[in-house]
Length: 275
Ligand SMILES: [Fe+2]
Ligand SMILES: [Fe+2]
Image (cartoon, rainbow, N blue to C red; front, top):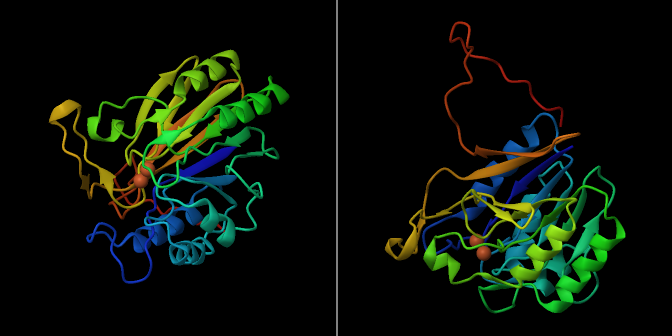
């Protein structure tokens, strides 16, 4: 089984730049084109929040049009730039609960997927309140042996990128306790940091994925600036190897030279996905 992850698309309406600088939609189009060509074909694409930027329904409608080009099944959860009502209005075909938090499970794949909603509407910090964690605890109790992946927006750890850590996740202590008690939780896949970062959580492991457009500047501690850079955007492929576990690879979007043969340096023609 193969999970592809993209995150933090920050789509704005037509003609509007994100932070007055980044035209995020063409970046997403390139990401979609890349995902459509990946072999083997991912079983699902997880989009881990900050799908749009400014909470507007027009942004969700534009996002929908862009994602209609993606020829793979996909699943969405909200980030701090999202609005639940807009997500429900435009993505009515997603398995969202009708009301309340956008939390749900995906059951038909070898790995069980559990999407968590860390959004506090109108704020940038994340939260797993007692209600959301109770729901998670009940879901985990249903299938305690089955390999499970949690996906959500805010990572449940301090990153050291101090300005971003100010928008941390409340409730992470109980989350760590839950995934320690449920050793079948293979991974917690997150976004929000616009970078690839990894950290152990109890007896599980949490990762963040690069964003499709702009990245958060890498600077640790109080000396770090709070800003974004146009480093190469990226995605992650989480490859399930039976008997071992989940292996995470990070790739960059963009046109790079190669691949070339290790034998004689000649160009290698890549197989094309039949789409
Ligand atoms: Fe973001
Ligand atoms: Fe975020």
